[in-house]
Image (cartoon, rainbow, N blue to C red; front, side):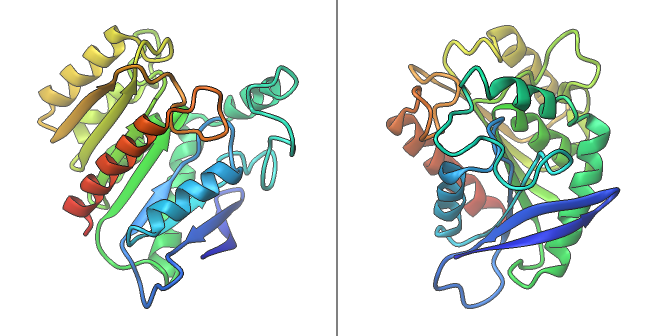
Length: 247
């Protein structure tokens, strides 16, 4: 079951969706789900529903709400198409760390006020560029975020990026899970090693896994690199994390 809502935010409105199991009888543990660079589209609605059917209330915002409402990728097109990618990169460029911080505050206010969400810890999961969002949200709201996960994440520990989430992980109190794509140019081994070292030095309870043979974007059912075996593994790992942290 999914319903759309508008979330008041600093300087605007976030269009979002709350997703619950069809048989939900009351508030359920909250999960904030950030889409990959392609934004809201059918495969992410399906992903949110599958997570919700595991016993959770999922809040899925439009990360591009400053530039567009609803889907950004036109029907019948792909986020990988040459005439679509420039728009996505332009919109993604507006998602600065400061912009993310304002959105995180608004999303947590939504969790606090909407009836679908149970009180207690919040989990956050991101894909591709939003794996970094999950880590930042956990770092900036350590008393609220109980679990953070990132799958085929990008640029989590770039040496030349002063805004990289690697610089804030020492504030994380949540349990962290990271499922990396194999041979991912957007997150090469040196970045994985740098992030792991920072998480370990900070005493974060974390797990890092490499999904051998799975390319960047392996959970996106509308991508040519979609890997159903790796996707199933991602759900197993995610549900284990959620079950052990937010119930």
